[in-house]
Image (cartoon, rainbow, N blue to C red; front, side):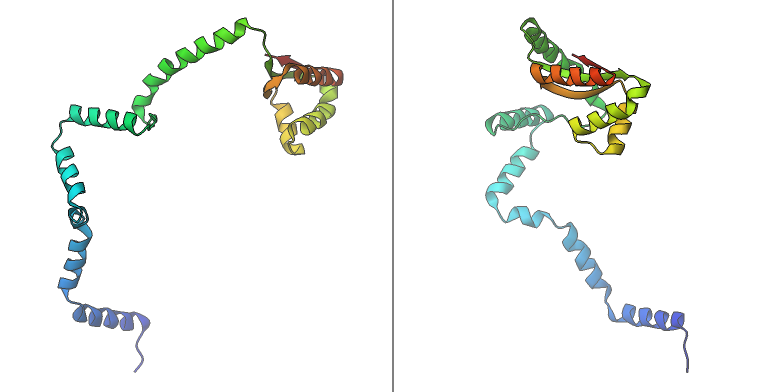
Length: 176
């Protein structure tokens, strides 16, 4: 009496279906969706939830704002379609803050590799590799993608040394 695997599987499934009562499955599904039992165990929490559920939308917004201030929770921008309008409002004060230090003497500079002589490309790649700590392949890609920002927030003395070194090799570096 040889049975195929498919026939044996069908007979096993039939026997399991007959042994497992349908009520067991219904009980599992009811337990899964009965999450309100967890909140009922603590009357203080259930009272707060009941009060919050009765608030209007404006009252809920006020509640959230007051909780953020009391608990020192910072406002976090939420990603989405509406986020585009808020970015320019935030960017305007930053420009004003940057304008004030511009009147003072600059101490930190951004270095940008503008261009280089074609014959000096291997020397520039080696120098970029040693300055930025990149691999040879990454430094080659970096040099070939010029003009590109090399370093940001570099002190004046160090920036002048880097500019002089790369100019000596045939590169053009701009201090911004």
